[in-house]
Image 1 (cartoon, rainbow, N blue to C red):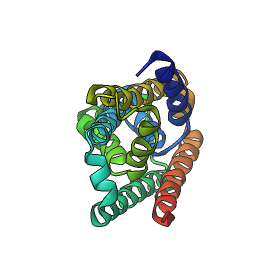
Image 2: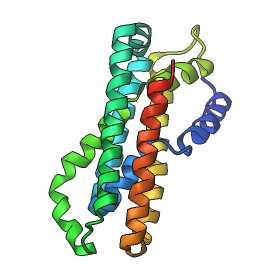
Image 3: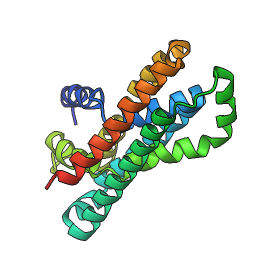
Image 4: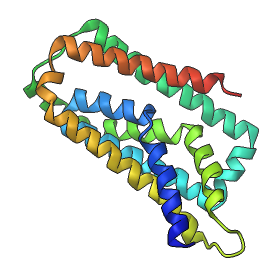
Length: 208
């Protein structure tokens, strides 16, 4: 794999990772609910999910899952259910509108594993991520000369750049946190993120 090929791959990956998706919405939801630490744990969870799916694709396991109809459908419907579950949680919070102060978010710090789990599951149960790896990676690999290490480098590049993008968003959210914690703003954001998560779940369910 040459540097020019890798540079072209970076352009494609950057365009993919900056597009809003379930990972973005989960990070936003948890950063509002549990502060900087909650958002950071979500990013770590999403990175872990990306690493798992990228490794599976690079090692050939992803192709087996993608071509096994029962496995792929199970993964797909688990993803649909989980995205809708997270979406309804956010919509319920928007409906109730019972938000505390900035200091109250300290109570959520003990739920760091929950935030990590939500990020991990939102990514690893999304078959679109696996399909992305399986459709994009082969375009930049030469079967005659490419090693498993090259494939892993390309796969982990997605995980790293995706995490960097989410951290930048998290940094921005932290900077304007006082404004975002206003009740009217918070309810609007929860309504938007909840609707978006359910929308992603419905779109995933509707795909053939």
